Amino acid sequence: MNKYLIFLIAFFSGLLGVFAFAPFDCWPLAYVSLLGLLWVAKQTQKSVAFIGAFVWSMGFFCFGVSWLNVSIHQFGGASLIVSYLLVGLLSAYLSLYPLLFVYLIRRFRIRSAVIFAVCWTITEFFRGWLFTGFPWLQFGYTQLDSPFSGLAPFFGVTGLTFFTVWGAATLHNLLMALRKKQSNVVGFSLLLLLVIGGLSAYSERFHFVTKEQDKALKITLAQGNIEQNLKWDPEYFYATLDIYQHLIAENLGKTDLIILPESALPTMENNIVPFFSSLDESASQVNTEVMIGSVYQSPESGKLFNSIVTLGHPQQSYRLDTDNRYEKHHLVPFGEYVPLEDLLRPLNSVFNLPMSAFQSGAEIQPALLSKGRSFAPAICYEIIFGEQVRKNLKKETDFLLTISNDAWFGDSIGPWQHLQMARMRALELGKPLIRATNTGISVFIDEKGKIIAEAPQFIETVLTETVAPTKGNTPYALLGNWPLYGLSLLFILMHGAMALLRRRLNHLPQA
Image 1 (tube, one colour):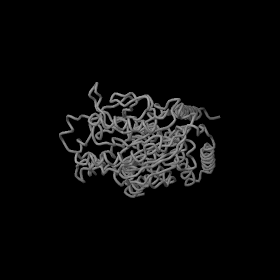
Image 2 (tube, one colour):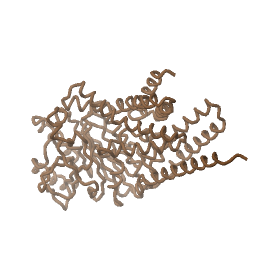
Image 3 (cartoon, rainbow, N blue to C red):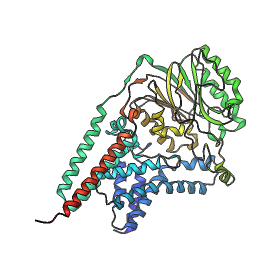
Image 4 (cartoon, rainbow, N blue to C red):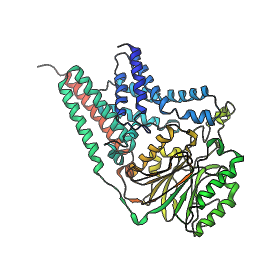
């Protein structure tokens, strides 16, 4: 086949993979896209295989993270050309990981479907770890609404990704066997597909947590819908304050807890302590508590944090140095901090976004407490890091909480992908998740990862729901990715032992 036709097929199969994710949610396309990558990786010519894999990756990532262009161009002040160039450079970097995958399967001449999945898991680990990690667009997220989502409470999104690659690789081997008329391989591949698919679908029958209806809370999410180009405008400050004051006031005394989004008020908390103190007193008088996403400067260290603070506790008055505060740990590179800032900040306005000088909070922090319930928080970008969220899950945790400001990404696919990852955290950990955002998508998600209430995007509104916590733990909540890594090591050892055995048998003298 003409190599340019191969590259064209590679590009469109990579592009197709994005349609398996939200907001398109056509989950079978994940297998089609991965089939395209595996087909390219197995091309006879090494150069065609590697260039094809790079082209597949660029199609996948350029479309998949195209939403970054909105924040870079519209709000970062970069020209349209520069914004697309930066998205392309990020995509080229992310393409290194599928290229590593192709190198591994070619270098070790891998044909086993399960070892394909092991190699992909290795490369995805590095993508989620190096340079603070960027584990966006993991194929496991595409299976959230598939018959195989029951694997998530066992192995998390990493395990679902493993399964997706394993399934695609088995399909690839089946098609190659049909082409070569290898009936024994065809039969084995079909059996393997049935076993893998059947067990995965059956896993949905297991239930690890139970609801505690007697501990249910009535919770209200305040969605201010502040446009990003106005959010940090000093002249719009009082308008923003009025919007949230109104949304809070009309729900005080009518709900147990009101939650505002990330950095809801466009100034440092330190500058409006009297406002926080007044709100704390008003809330406590009517037995309603309030959680606010706040930009906060520590009086002791002078460090700036992206935080969540709770007001309205009847026995604990608000103070700036309260212990009932969460400080964001996993910051967005270039958005909340700038690596090599002395070198980069003078180069372009894109490296000087508002509030891009935050410090990291501790990786593991105490739970946020409100109305006698325990919340495991994550701010915006942090919700995509499943292991960090899991590590902050305590025995007494009742709810997962994430607040965000997805106005940065406008009316793009980014906020929908972000929401999909939040849904996965709820399913993995078996806990209801509450998501408050500035412009949407504000939702309540149950312990199965299903949305039970949703506010429309780009509307100033409130969303109220009574949510019951759960008790119990999923296997993933207890053990994380270690069982999957252990199985991967076992598969490698078994594969190596079989290869060694075959080599020795081939060297035995013929009778």
